[in-house]
Length: 144
Image (cartoon, rainbow, N blue to C red; front, side):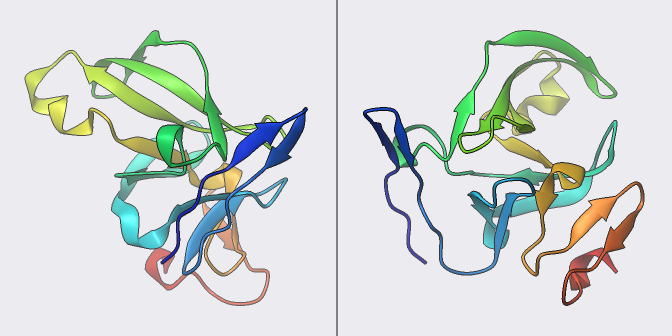
């Protein structure tokens, strides 16, 4: 597994390429996270499935995603302070990061990331579309 540092120089975006089984932006193909870093596939958002990751390519690790402003957001599991995360290549929101949880039982989410399955390509290029997978050359066995 290889992680590098992406940078923006004179307005040009340089992104990090990951090796291994990756999730990427469905529009720009920017590498976002390794499947090894999935904590749970049992999360949901407005567009369907969402996966909880312990890390994505962000902050000091790289700049494949940027973050929005902190905001309080009411979710199914209660109030959380979150920041949206955006693909640096196309600016699409690909998920969010949990900055803090207001309820003690939800504290395990702090510092973790959600990637919305509808907004990313799976490791084999599959796209999630409203409750089903559209295959682009394989199967995402964990979704079966």
